[in-house]
Length: 280
Image (cartoon, rainbow, N blue to C red; front, side):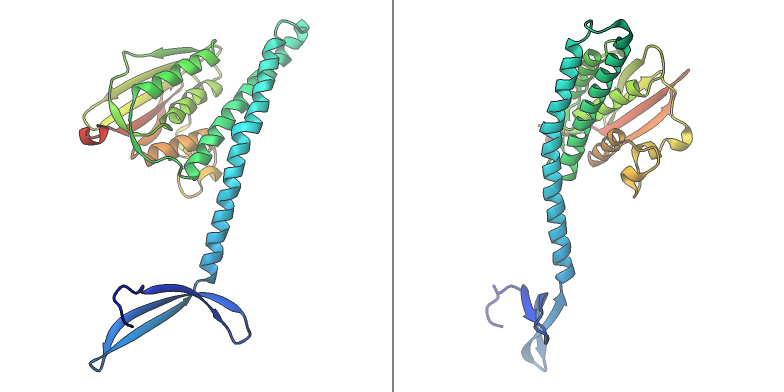
């Protein structure tokens, strides 16, 4: 036991009496015994831990592969379906127009779902770290994107979106995209109407997305975000709202749903305002 630079932990393989190799972690500490320098060694079997780490690495590799498939192959095929269905508009029998519209809407929803699945995979792979971001850019971009994709819907913005920097990252786009899509896709009104409003103080910004849909029963307001240990297995949880909750929580913020007046729901995202030093 000479040399202070020697490591105190080693991972080695030991051979048992029956010839089996076992991975162990050997920890060595210097002590004194009867006034003389000595060493205490602890040997711990880490076979299960190494197997668990190997399974995690394999799962990560599989998730990365699935992410690539979702990003490219599935999404590209769905976009082709959307494009050809749009080309066929006005070129089919009148009684088939409804079927064509259903194909187009379903394909668009599936494209949106692949984007959400891709974003959730990125979060699970921890490819994004929390930073700071100007609130207006992702919120305004997603409002315009939803207006373009859903021309029949009415989307209003109360006042102007303030110039404020919050804690988050480029995935904040996914938060607003999924909440806006949710407000339209689950809206049973003849004309979906969405109102976006923003208020803030020195500590937090609150973005409210109100709709004129069926609303959310009070008993389901926790479950729809997949909160708790069950995550996506929670009753009523959808992948989009689960992604919203996961991202907002990672930013140190909160998301919840309230009643709208006279009908519908209001989804509120609260994000912490970035400190001046962090924002620069």
